[in-house]
Length: 516
Image 1 (cartoon, rainbow, N blue to C red):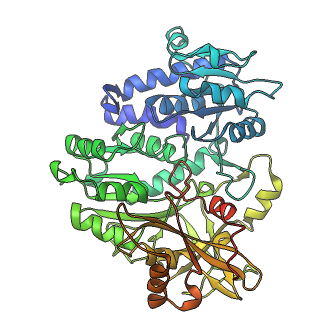
Image 2: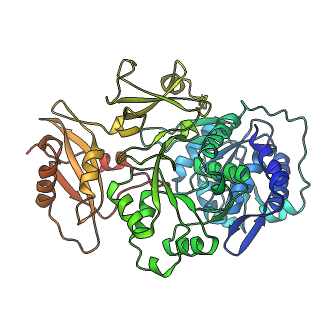
Image 3: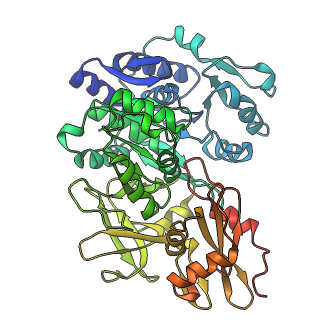
């Protein structure tokens, strides 16, 4: 199935209905189809042919969805880029992808313009709102969205001959472990993953309204888009997260479920005005991107009566690999069981499969797995071996097939020859009454190879000392697994989808002397 066929099939199956809500605007599925076909005409008029790349960089808004369908409809390949990225990172992506066109918003124009500064062949820029021409470098062409679309016909090109194996998206990894890599995802990859998620839903839960608060210019955006079309559902799009506004939408649209990250779950849990809203419709919140503290799950259910369900995925798997299910017990610390059509195995450093319960690297196989990295044969060969995707995540599987992500392979701390998995210690720290968040990293140590450093964010008004937290850890864990030092910080560095950037913490505290 091609992603370009989903919207038409949605209209045929469900008829016209309200598809997108944003601020005071509402777009039906039929109105959305018209806009998308005009966007196809627009990007085609700017020289986009089958296989050409179009970079899309803007905060959450309906134009992200319009752009996705419009670019795909013209045979182009979408390059979604988080608008929070630095211009140097965007510059790398522009060069690597050789994007012909950029679709963005006015307040990002200067950043995009600066990112094109050293490009000999500058992309054309479509601005979805009123551009400020003073933000632009010379030689850059800016097309105004509204004005251009008003003159565009509905795009039709029966000779495109798109195939399921054609690349639909190139999604650049965050680059937290080095230079970003462009993950290629085909129509088949994304469709297969959406269908796996659909298979897990109860029939009565398939239609309804959800909340789009995670960045749409990310793999999440394709899950939302494809899910809406397949389910006949709707989405309320948020340009930024606001817990009280989320409460209002849950009450108004009787939202049953939506996807978030742990930081959002935490903000909802501790919001003082939550009791003012009727949140009884809420049944589940999907949590991804970062590990969810067990205590946070319990407290959320106690307050709202809704389950927070953990899941695991990565860009290279489109992204879903495993999830907790409605009809299966939740096992603490587990991300659930593999999604339909997804195979997993745990291997040692030699690639040999390990017995149940043993920790090793997680490998994934399925129709959702990327064919490789764009213009990066070396990385492709390293990640894809003998038909399996090497995730770089350390994990184990229990006797019932539940998957437990122990840690990132790169986050493993080796202290004096002992393997330390930071997640165990992080789970313990956030249970302390004074701790809001914690991230544990290894820092260089001449004596031990690596020492354990806990970076802690305290709750507002909380008072706790380094010594108290170290004592607390040593009372609950083996001493060799506990931190040598605790660093109190204002906030943890994160990327645009809430993932803690441990690379930045390691850089920040690399020179910390813990051998004394």
